[in-house]
Image (cartoon, rainbow, N blue to C red; front, top):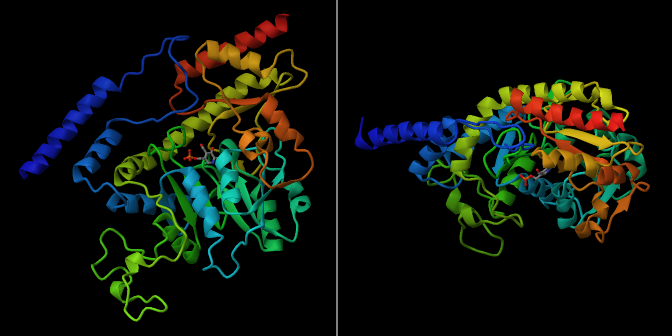
Length: 441
Ligand SMILES: Cc1ncc(COP(=O)(O)O)c(C=O)c1O
């Protein structure tokens, strides 16, 4: 072994020891140890992979990002995956791709995109950022996904796309969405940021839309710290998304492309009006961004993706335990619901406090938070009531009453793999104690 390889092996060994000392033990004292709703799950392998990538010091998009993209595409079952620096960036690139002049029928300013009023801010933001008009439809209570029965009512002659999000890992009923899109020649973007590993009709979500996205923020199913990806089966959309991520340039070289470029004629491209050939690396064909993932992040992702099946199984098991424990309190709570064809890899466990309950969401959240159990509101509730979104130009189908209910009465708690039996027992016991008190009043 050369001395740098020897040193590397020693560093790996030390990192493994460090992991054991610093991170391996997760003691739990009920009531004192915080029970978060989500978080990164890792062991020495992720630390070693990250350190190894640092020792290579490639830093930007490189061999690991490209390997990670390959694994992601295989996992979802699509032709191409593009890593980016967040799920929000993935959504922005997906939406911007549909505005590209390189498409035969690009979306034009003022065109409409149907989406749910109930969701995360950066599902809606890219619609507005691209000069398009969101048309909001209400969510269903229980699934918290957009109500597909309202799709027709949302449509106008400016409708060009539907942007669906699989809320908390629970898949949207894709059949009517696909049918609606087919009938009216609309694009579909799937925001699967919270749903990596979820299937609908036996197919991974993220494989239905023209474009789809995931996030690798630490609370998600796998993590790279910050990070995300854009998926598509369409080679032109893949090229456009790649350009948008990489400053808007046309070049699609990988880290090991020859000097003459992946195109084979790197220095022979033309710019109209210029009588000299031009370097493909500086041929800008899109109004782009720089949203690249680093090789250090991808190194972590490559370990995490191997763990995805175990992570998904743990999420499902924790969800089922919580569901069974809360069934007796359905008179107080709306419990989660899902489609017959769905097999959700749950991101979290959503709960809505019924309007007739003798307590409010605030009472229940307060009870849990005082006992160190983290609760989260269901994202923006009704997005049109959020300060930043009140004055955007939009249309809506009706008054969005369910989204208002979510704003007022819904929240979620965790089911992530970090919740072992002791933590799950504690959360369930704490909830049961709360409901026992309500019953006894
Ligand atoms: C549905 C949905 N879309 C997009 C995002 C944004 O992802 P990121 O935090 O990676 O930007 C989130 C955030 O968690 C989300 O829940």
